[in-house]
Length: 211
Image 1 (cartoon, rainbow, N blue to C red):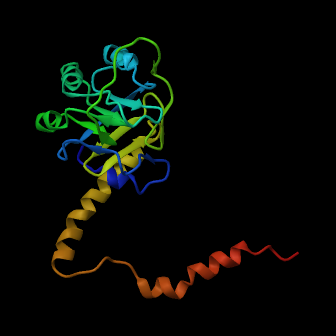
Image 2: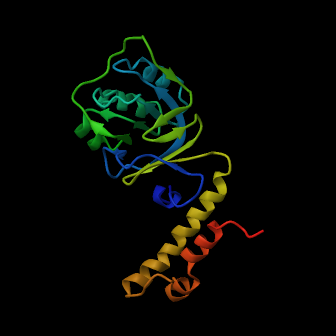
Image 3: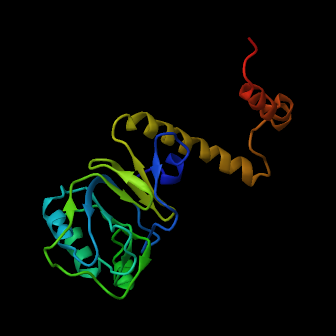
């Protein structure tokens, strides 16, 4: 929590959700392992199963199968999730009761807001399975990290070196802020970079090798 999701966006292997995915409360910041849900149409039964099964500290990540009309999370469901120790909820679709959730500060991320809601019908839905959410593949147990800028998905295998890189970058930014406020520039040797003719090198590599 001492670094930002945007820092991880620089690294290979980190997946990211589409920019439309944002928290209802801009001050929200969350991190936890994914507990996944797939909800079809207006039936949100699987989400209630997930609330009972998801471990404390996890993030419920919801694949809405393309639906952008029916909100599966509102103030009451967010209260239940918070009371059961769920770190946050991510919805590839709309939420409702947006003002109440914003006031609570509980991390609910979504791609829109709607006045119509889902129902508990018991007809469809799955949980704890591989899903897609806002353009990102999400496996159960993936690390979900989000703030006002959006959400990244970090594979749990090998996450520690990425975290160390992010922490080192955050430490460097302290000195960078001082430099830039004093009128300095990023320490990039632009002249040397131009002289290197990187585009020319790339074009040369594309040509077939002579026999």
